[in-house]
Image (cartoon, rainbow, N blue to C red; front, top):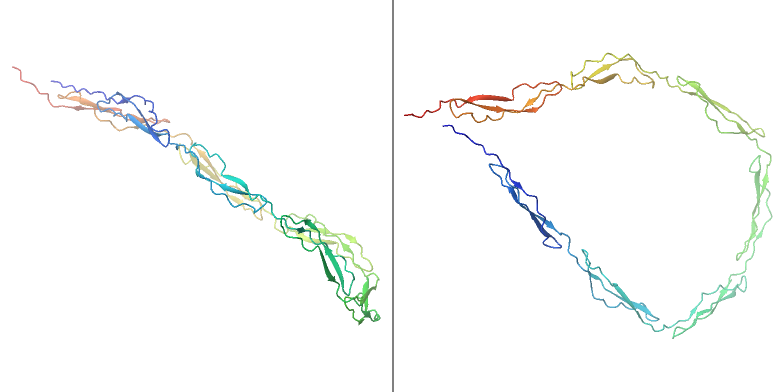
Length: 399
């Protein structure tokens, strides 16, 4: 008897598209809505199971509208004045602010009314005092007066006007007495021997001044020794230094100045030219190098390697001379891609035996996981087989 094994195909579950979402359960402050789908093909023979058939999500999460609410009016404040007409106010506040699209607040938050409208008493007012008149005497005691005018008459029981004139004493001090002085002294010595100096003479007070009296000057100055003094010449500022005679190794530079004002009255004039050393530093020496050596062998035979060459310094730079530059160079080589052999997957499991007894075969296989590239090779069979069920098949008795 031969037994045949039948392998049923695997059937994965298939579902329909989602239905439209149901209406939201609330118009604001957060509700829920759902959608569903149906099974078109059930899973069979170990196929992939069906996913969820219903789904729920939040909706209308915005806050619900809140209308504005105002408080009752407060009491009126005291009147701003006690007479002549003032105002007093009252107010109210927002108890609840409008929110989320609710009705906004309307109406003023303050109101006012007039109060104490009776006429106020008017006191007499006067101008500021005018200036005092000149004193009747310049010393020894006199008088002076000042006045002011009514700018607002008294009304409605207001205060009456004060005095409109004022008098005060002035210049009570004794009248001044001037001092008397002695005769002049002889002239003193001159302050300079030439070019104009000064000399002074003095006198003294015989009788002091009293009560603010004045005193004539007690000293007097005059010029003396007016002959011109010797005057040295005046020179300009130094000019710019001339270019150095050498750029290095020590040279000379010069600068000059000119006479602005010649010497006079026997004065002197000197020093119109000046020299200084310059560029005393050693002259620069540039670096000298040998020619480049040969390139070294490439570090790789494929896939991109590198090779280098060098040169040596035959004479180093000195005193700021030009530097030696690079003494080694590198370049890429053998940039062609390296050959890559293929990679094979692991062997799969052996297939069922072709017979249940009497000697059959079963096979297994593997695949190329990574193909060969850049000239690489792929070695090894993709299938293999072996014998199986080699036991002798049973033989039934035949009569």
